[in-house]
Image (cartoon, rainbow, N blue to C red; front, side, top):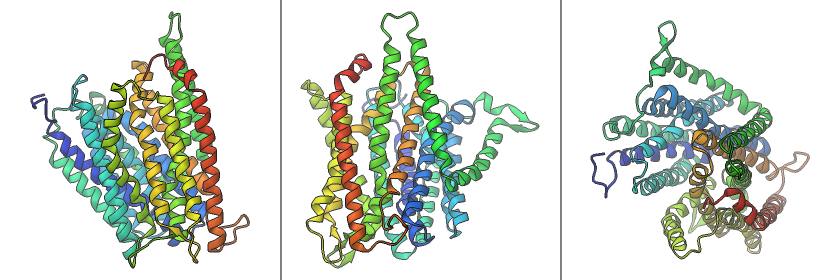
Length: 494
């Protein structure tokens, strides 16, 4: 690299702004999705939550395929551009205004996100040498870009979508994606030093007459959109697909760990793979509850939260802005805190960090009980209830999220690092899908489908949120009790 080692490579800011606008696009659509399903397409709460869960689950599963296609055939630059254009197409398809166009648009967004999300982070990593001390700092800067995009989406797109019409919000998200594509393409010379950007030799090979592998994958990507359409509509199929994938990948990792241990006295890699699978289950538990933000918590905000601020009514979807706001506020504080605790020899173990994160998530849900003490005559809790809920959820997230990817690379043998990272992404996919199922238990309808009054709806929300909180506290207690055993399985990984 020709850059001065105290600064960052030129390409970092190009990738920062490209990712920022992609997150603006993704979170913009996601912020409005549940309310659009319930208010415009007249779906029931449970059905809307299951559609949302299927969509976000597939979004998190797609990078597993998108990363592999880029590694083997497409190269990272083309994969990112293909993904960006598919995502923009998805937003504009939704403007068709009915169920068909929504599901088709969601399909394009899923496939596009798989290419974009998996590979832009890879390019960031490849701007640095393996031992470059600036790498962690570079990823921290990149992570800030992600959250600025999410913050802009959950304020601007949320406000525009609910005030002027959902179509205006989705259209704005699509324009954001086109802007991100333009920034990525126009700044391509700045990140050109990163290896693996161009088509691979395998990608250039002719496979069907004059059609090469890159062209075939591009055509195939559009053909995946109807498949996603079907999986969103018939989302119960995902029960079997995701469970099957989880079992298959878990078995593959344990077998790979055993192979890496071949001849060793202590089954170190096998144990580490078992530990990783346990952490995947914990990760699913955390994010399935955390991801209530886009479903049950948004509908709760719409119906049972007093959102009036000095005469201005905050749109319900806009309450989702608390999370990226707190990430930006707390992110740098946490990164400094971990370094200082490590220097003092008091940095908690990985299992304890996961447990403390889950405790904060639990307390966030239990805050709704405090809000209930200040309920008004319209059966609404104060907006501060969501302020403190999201503050606790975000601090909990910062105990888990930043260490997850690093932990995966440390626990897995080098020859299956990609498979292990795919497995970690799969845990997020399962979490989002399960989150939709949890959200389907809440909401404004009774067991027989009748619409609940504001008072009955509030009771139901608080009952479900409290149950989630107490179950999470129990899970955290189990992890704390098993801390030493988990550390033993990890064989020295900190």
